[in-house]
Length: 100
Image (cartoon, rainbow, N blue to C red; front, side, top):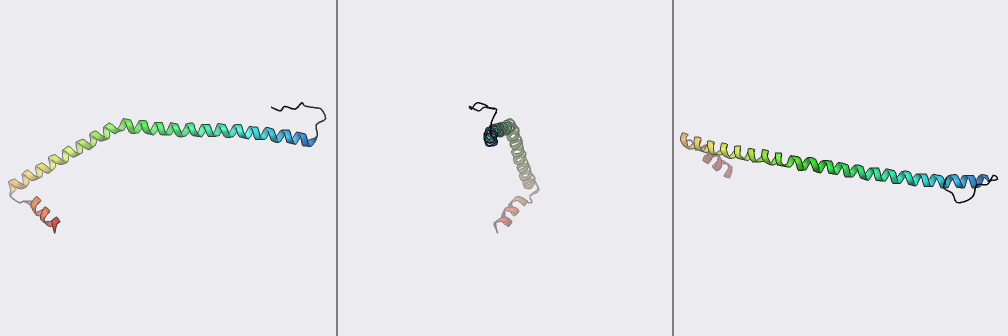
């Protein structure tokens, strides 16, 4: 108990209730501060964790995207070569059909 008044043996019920309520308010304020600080630390920890995962996986995602684009260009080039060699001109026909 952190009260500034001296404890007397003849305290009234009102004084005891008053001291008890004051102690409860102080306890609630301490608990709220602890809860709030734990909540802030938790949110910051989650943010740091997400940032770390995104930063570490960013290079791998770029590599996957670059590989996919390279394969796409190679496939398009191969289709164009096959189309010209067969003389079917499927790519030109497809372009004409999409323009309609």
